[in-house]
Image 1 (cartoon, rainbow, N blue to C red):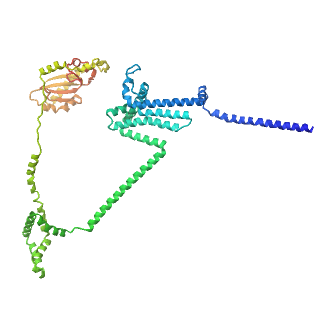
Image 2 (cartoon, one colour):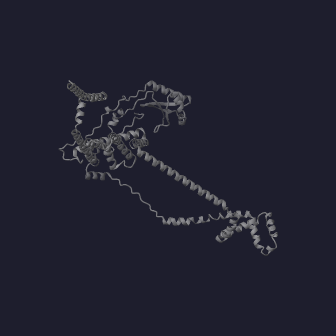
Length: 553
C-alpha cells in the first residue's frame, strides 16, 4: 500500500509537473496575444485593405526589393545620360521634336540615347526644371541603392527635401543671374534659356520681377539659401557666421587703427608747428639780401619803395635821425651800418612795398602770341570734302531693272498670308455725327451774343461738325482786330457752358477765325470704322496707317 501510495504521489507530482510545464507556454501565448492586440488596434485603417496588405507581403520579399532597386538604378542612368546630353545637343534636337520626327525620317537625333533621350531632355529640361531635373536621377539613385543594399547611404527624407529645393532654386538663380549680367544675348543666353534654366526658372524669374522686382528677387534667393543652410547644415551656417563676425571685427579694428594713426600724425604735426614758431623779422632779414641777387626787377621795386619812404610825412624822418644821434660814440666809426639797420627794422610800413613785386609778373603774357603761332604751325589741319550720293536717272534705273530683273516684291515672301478680317475688331457704331440742329443753333447764338457784348460784329458764321468737336468759322466785320477775339476765349467758354474750347486766330490758309466747341455727345472713333473706310481700303500707299479722324472726317 505504501508503494502504491508513493507511486501515486509520484504520478501526481509528474502530472502536476507536466501540467505546470504545459501551462507556461499558454501563459506566453497569452502574453503574445496581449502584445499584438494593441498594435493591431493602433495600426491605420488603410493598412488593413486587401491591396495594401498584398503589396506589403510582396515587398517583404528580398528578391522584389532587389529587382526594384536595379530598375531604379537603370532608370537613374538613363535619365542622367539623357539630361546631360541634352545640355549639349538639345538645341539641335528641338526642331526634330517640334516637327514630330519619326523613326522613318532620314535625320537622326543628336542625343546620346537617340529619340528617347532627346524627348526626355526636352520635356524634363526645356519644358520643366532645366538643370534642376538632375534631382530626379539623384533621388532614383538613393532609392535604388537602399533597395539593393538594404541600407541608406544618406537620410532619405532630408535628401529628398534638399533635392526638391535645389530643383527649383538652381534654375531660378541661373535665370536671375543671366538676366542681371551680360549673358543675356547670343548663344549662351539661348542655351541657358532652352535647357539650363528651363520653363520653371523663367516663370519664377518673371513672377519675381513682377511682384518684388530685381532687388527683391535677389534678397529672396539669398534668404532661401540662408534658411536651407540653417535647417540642413547648422554647423556650416554657424561656422560661416563666426567667420563673418571675425572679418567684420578685424576690419573694424583696422579702421580704428588707421584713425588712431591719422590722429597721431595730426597731433605730431601740430606739436612741431607749436615748438618752432616762424620769426617774421628773421624771415624778412634773410629774404631781403637774397632778393637783389636773384632779380633786378626786385631791386627796382625796392628802390621805388625807398623813394616812396623818403617822400613820406616829415614826422617819420626826425624819428630816424633821432635814432642815429642817440647811437653811442663807439659806433660812430661805422655810421653807415647802424643807419641802414635801424631803417630796415623801424620802418615796417615800407615792407608793404613788396606787394608791388607781384605787379610786373603778368608781363610774360606778351609772349603768348608767339607760342600760339608755333602751335598753329605744328597742328595738322585737313578739310574733307563731302561726297554727295549719286542719284540715278530714270534711264539708269530702267537699265538696272532690265539687268537684274523686275523690282523686288516684298509680298511674295508671304504670298499665302491673308490680312485678318475686320470683324475681329469691336464695333462702336457707325461713327455718324449725332450733333442736333438745335445744339448747333444754340451755340451759334451764344457765340454771336458774347461777341456782341464786346462790340465785335460778325458778317458770316459757318459750322463744320466733327466726331468730337464742332468748328465754327467766323468772318469778322471789317476793322475788327483778331487779337481782340483771341482774348475772349474764357468769356466764350463761359457763355457756351463748355470746357476746353479753342480759338484758332486766324485759320491757316483762310481769312477766318475758328472756334472749336466740344460736342455734348462725342462719337467714338473706332479702329474698325477707320480700317473699313473707303479711303483706307483703296489707298495707294505701300503701308497705310490709320491714326484717327480730322475735323473734316
